[in-house]
Image 1 (cartoon, rainbow, N blue to C red):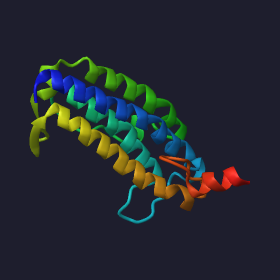
Image 2 (cartoon, one colour):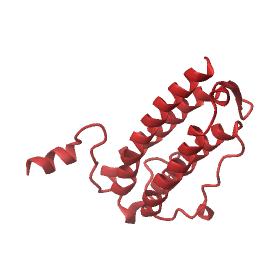
Image 3 (cartoon, rainbow, N blue to C red):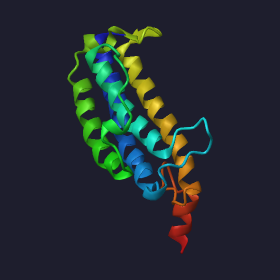
Image 4 (spheres, one colour):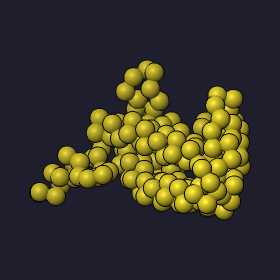
Length: 170
């Protein structure tokens, strides 16, 4: 891919990622605050752990692309400061916006340059943007399945949910 094409593709992908931010914060906000220790299975993350994973690693992914290398993943323990769903609702849009700005500041050459993903594989930085979006949507989908079981109402994501449709007809 040519550098000028990399800038065009990056802008398209970044706008898509930006459009997902309100959906993600909507999922965070829909999780009942008193049930964040819920997990559907012993192998699953708790709701809080999954929220932290999304809130921290989505930003880490973008910042790593901007830096041209993937370092250690962020610490998602209590030390990260995300102790409630509201913490994620407030922090996620801000940190994502800052990380997106770093990607927008990259040159076309930086976007098409091959970077290493923790020794697992190498590909152009631009391809990692698509992977970052998929990573986020994947984990948000997992988290959305927790909501109703936890006693919450599933918000509209890409259209009405059973909960928002019922609310609209009442």
